[in-house]
Amino acid sequence: MKIIILGAGLTGLSCAYHLKRKIKKNNNFSFGLYEKEDDAGGLCRSEISRNFIFDYTGHLLHLKSDYAKNLVKNLLKKNLEKIKRNAWIYSKETYTPYPYQANIYGLPIKVVKECVEGFLKTGYCLSGSSYNFQPDTYRSFYDWIINTFGEGFARHFMVPYNKKIWTVHPKEMTCEWMGKFVPLPKIREVLTGAFMPQGKTFGYNSYFYYPQKGGIQVLADALSGKVQSNLFLGKKIKEICLSKKIVEFTDGQQLKYDCLVSTLPLKEMILKIIKKVPYQVKEKAKVLKCNSVLNINLGINRSNISDKHWIYFPEKEFIFYRAGFPMNFSSSMTPPGTSSIYTEIAYRKRGNTSGFSGKMIDGKKLTNRVVKDLIKARVLKKKDAILNTKILNIKNAYVIYDRKHKESTKVIHKFLQENKIYSIGRYGGWKYSTMEDAILEGREIANNLCS
Ligand SMILES: Cc1cc2nc3c(=O)[nH]c(=O)nc-3n(C[C@H](O)[C@H](O)[C@H](O)COP(=O)(O)OP(=O)(O)OC[C@H]3O[C@@H](n4cnc5c(N)ncnc54)[C@H](O)[C@@H]3O)c2cc1C
Image (cartoon, rainbow, N blue to C red; front, side, top):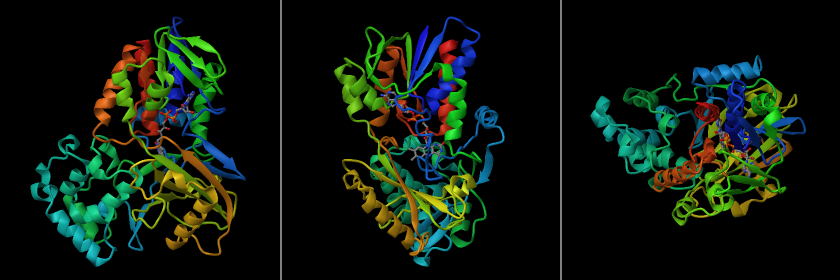
């Protein structure tokens, strides 16, 4: 059995790592991991620029499963820190702790009044503990927001913030993706947070892990070090012939496989890489949507510009939806006496609600705008100097769960599996998932292939 893994991001690396351990005991298997870049890691990489280390925006480890936690601890040994989240929201010229729905105390009284009034009328408040949270029973993410938190929370945070990050209105989205990603405080907690400091944390990422040195790349490096003899870099997949079970690379090399594990973006795989895909499957791939994120990173000539980890910006007048501070994840991210900031701007070519169009990408102009907005939010001072700018463009960033997502991905995965292709990971699966999910999914497919 010859297995080819396409893409050496965290999912591909984890699949290779677990296959290697299995294959030691079973000589009937062989595998290779092929990556187009000259480095493994995919989105779990870090760029070093003039002694600043920049990840592809914030990349923090949210480790809930014991297996993933132990694996990461074994791989990174002492180079791993557990950190308590310090995340904030900036709106109405006020900083309030994250999540908004549990912490509106401190915002202008009119905003608090509107949020509380709306909340008291929601299905959640009226039915209390019998309230149905089941995401699939709501027509849209917007309906869920209105039923759970009400008009005020929707108007002041949920709708503007989600329009900015997802690039579509929550009315166009389903609730399939929400799971752990949207914190759900109890009724009492929402009301407490409206009238006094909450003093409590919420959500799946209230703690996170991060390497003490080297940025998030060290995790990918640790994994790729374990599979080096099976890892082939600078190998871009050009074409796949299903009938002959052959993968062809852009350098002309052809390889035969029995089984393929792909972590390449699903849409691209169907529309550009696999030859002779049936019309119905192609049509399903055409409607898959994701946004892109432009990540503008700055190095600043002043230490401790913020004590926060990251800040959410729901308002239109700020171009980014989030900004964070790598030096507060680890002091190794910046040279002494400096600070760094990552900002995230979401965009999409068509039907964009984020307020930013990809056509506007112009490094210098955008950096000026980002700096201006950071001064407006009192993060930067006018006299601060920008020592370094690193712009990273994440073309496939957040998969958009619109009404066509579920059916389309189902049809495509069925077609691929019938042809012995397992398309996994955040973009192979075409879903919203984390680095922990990537590690676990890579392991699961390796176990299944060898069982
Ligand atoms: C803005 C943003 C912030 C995030 N923050 C966090 C966070 O804080 N915590 C967290 O846990 N997760 C976070 N994530 C999610 C995390 O990045 C992913 O879950 C994880 O890195 C996905 O790994 P993957 O291997 O599935 O995909 P990828 O990392 O995309 O790997 C796919 C690989 O395939 C390669 N490839 C593509 N095309 C070809 C080709 N034709 N030939 C050969 N190789 C190819 C790519 O180069 C890449 O290396 C974030 C994601 C984004 C977009």
